[in-house]
Length: 299
Ligand code: UTP
Image (cartoon, rainbow, N blue to C red; front, side, top):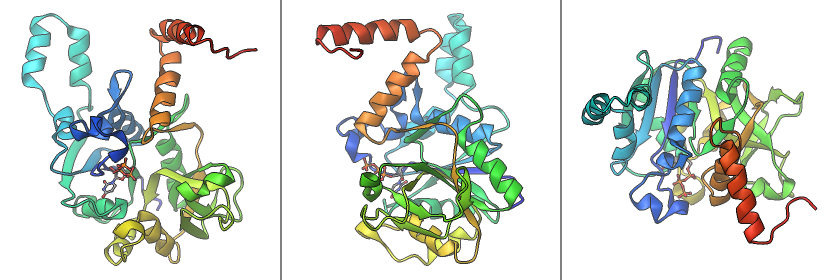
C-alpha cells in the first residue's frame, strides 16, 4: 500500500443505544466534548492524515450529522451582522475548502462491516481509512491516523490500531496475534472477535482506526453474518490477512471510549483540564464538587 490514503470512512449508522434517551434525537457522534461534537475530532484527525474525501455512512435518522457539515447560511448571516467574527470563523471552518463530504446511507444497521461496505462505490480501488468517532484519540503530537498512514505508506501494508487492555477485558474487543510485535508494530497473524480471557492470543486490542486496502471489500461482500447477525469488520480482516499484509500498530496517544458513559465523562474531564481557557475553572469546579462530597483524592 505504498499509496497515500486520501479517503476516510466514518461509519455513523449505529443506533447508539447506550446513550438513550439522548440518542433518540441526537446521534451519538454529535455528543460534544466541551464545544465540539465527537465527529469533529475524528474528522480533524483524518484531515491531518491527508484525507480529502470524507465518507459518512449514516442512516435516515441522522440528519444532524449532514446538517453539521453543511453550510448554515442564516446563522452565518446573523453572526456577520452581529459582528461575531470569531464565531463566524468557527462555523465556516468546520471543513477546510479542499475537503469534501460525501454521505452514503446504510438502510439497515447490519453491522460495522456492512457499513464500511456501503462506502465501496465512493472509495473505489484505493486504500482508505476507517475511523470510529466514538473512539476519541488524544495526542500532543501527530494524531493516531497520521501515525498509521505514515506507517502504511512506508511499509506498504494495511494497518489496524491497537492498544493494550487488561486480560480480563479481552471479551470486549477484537484481539490480534502479532508474534513479532516490536512494541510499536507487528504483522497480524490472527485476529479474533471478543475472545474469552483464557483463549485470547494476546492483550493487544483493536480500537477504531484502520487503514485498509480495497481488497477488504471482497471479504465484506462474501462475509457470512457473525455475532448478533451482523457483518463484522473483524471477520473480513481475519480473511484479508490470508493474502495481504496487515500490521497491528500501537499508536502514541490516549484513547477514550466515548461509546460508554465513563469514556465520555473521562474525555470531558481530560479535555477540560487541558483546555486553554477553561482549565483553571474546571479544576476549581472539580475540587469544589469533591470537597462537597467529602472525597479526598490526595491522601
Ligand atoms: P457500536 O458497536 O458502538 O454500536 O458501533 P452503536 O449502535 O453505535 O452503539 P450502541 O452499542 O448501540 O450504544 C461501532 C461503530 O459502528 C457503527 C456505529 O455508528 C459506530 O461508529 N455502526 C455499527 C454502523 O455504522 N452501522 C451498523 O450497522 C453498526
